[in-house]
Image (cartoon, rainbow, N blue to C red; front, side, top):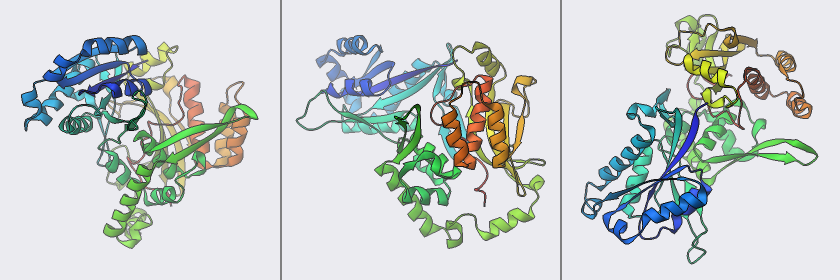
Length: 430
């Protein structure tokens, strides 16, 4: 199973007090410093990093200095970006192809970088609290270029210098990702900026997971004291997230005709009915003569969801470059939950192993419940299962069933399906 390594790159000036706060409160395995020649002579950064390594159990990276004459020149932005790139290449040992872009209907999403030698997935954080204003601007620019997470340490003036909170900024692709959101989902969240996660419909749920990924919303599980180990998932959209949704909604009101603001236009809907699914023009994986059109991607699983104890599954996933997918397909008024695996390097090639065979399940709540009961492992939390079934929420049933199917194969899940391919293909079902 790939190991995850979080690398922090800090802009440093005369006040180093902010640095340790970010390293403590955000996940960190390695730290690098970017500073000026002058500051490097004034301050003992080496001892400082050794102290962090001892106190926090992290690795001290490099101290990267830039001459003052260059740091205050018109070329400063490019110089800082070049230093950040050199750190990324050092940690990942790969060329720029490691950014592994993924396209979702014109939306660009960069995956975490991976180290070639030891199969380590690297996540990068860039702290821009210290240094000059120009260094901070260049740091945020570099973070956007390389899909790192820029953050600032907010501290109370005249307060305890060791106290503060890291503010992680949304990446540059935030507006692009949110611009792909359906109008109904945006309106739903503007009306209900907080609430129960699984009480929202599928499009709103996936929008919440996107906002969570962008640090514009949070999700949390509230434990039920009467039923230890059980509880309900809730979400809370931040003020910045709400503001961005309002901006996108207002922009659409000004630029889109009224008939499109409530969903698909009548013209598009009519055209969709007239065109047979075999003639639909689009990405090769978005339509199929027998299955119809891909409307939603519920889950994807990769080596990241393989527990360390299941070495065989990890080896098989790596050998055939496999990715597991749970998708909803629709042809006419019939919908199918499709659970299958693809070779990400050649999606026309399928693994010739029964373990990875494809399953197709008709989307009807009664059938989904039956499949859930048939797939339940021994000693499953019956109270949690009962709540899901009694809720009779189609999306919750589908995603729970998909998780059960993947779990039976040996995969493990966190609280939310961050691999969701929402926004990639299809439109909201009428």
